[in-house]
Length: 463
Image (cartoon, rainbow, N blue to C red):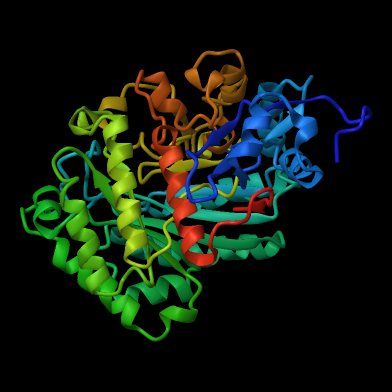
């Protein structure tokens, strides 16, 4: 079937990644970052697309490519459409997200951390201020449907007394406004015993935990030691093993992600960590991911691998996970119109000193002590008149104007520009997928082939 003269003129989207041809039948995976969807396409059909012979394509393939935004209307300004989509998502956002750091202290003295820790927790007046601000935001936000708290630090578990006091009041606010409620937590895991974990889940509705293990035991214990120099790896691992072994975990609904911060000093040990997690059967229960060590108001990023080196390392790690029978996330399945809390108009972090910020990486960092740009205000102090413009509120306009390289990047819809703060500081925050997306797609095709076998010529399938 050929394309009728009434069919709108189409072009190849600028937001695509295409894998090499693989398999006996020479198929390619075509992944659209505008739709976060992929199709398997024969090499012959893709050659017709590249040459503009769209009328020679099977009708079902042409329709599928249009639905996936692999082919788009010839007159469409795709970049403007992406930015308009991001802005609309921000305007329609029905989540009120508040990050709370109940403690300025931490048991660990990680060598790449930029924070300065003090033995201080939120006092009663600051906790009242947080609750009052939450109430004010909920009253004026008619669009809110979900209320979410992020517990941060320092180490939030050192502020457990505050969490026990504040959570019932935060949950009551959600009930008063007929909202769903949940919380998440970034914790070093040192104090996260099974008993405390299930208290947090069952009573305080903390449903997502991010816990760090930085490579094999020797690597981790060189970097993430206690303030008095003691190792922490075994304690954290034993906590994770205890949680996984508890019969309540399978049905509790909570998610634990194990994060490994990677730089040039520990990347080789990450594979050994993976072997440890597999040996203890923890990857059946928990997610695992890596992230490059980045600047936290310091020079920690100088020890990192280059972006391409990290991307290559990550592909090896993903392949190892696959070969071990696990299913790592290879390609995003959703878009990223709201890249971080700084783009949510009412989101903020409140620290133990009562200061509020639009970013979780500013509080307690000496390098930012005199930088007022990221500070939104202070609890108990009158708001400035006129209201201070929110940092990065114009982020999507800046992308559209070409102020950052994201302007011409093919992964913009699934990336969102990443960290505005890092771009401002002159540090590229581009995610690894920018540099290894074709390799990820090849791995995805290998996985599909193992599961189902590749499809026949001129037949298409959604990946």
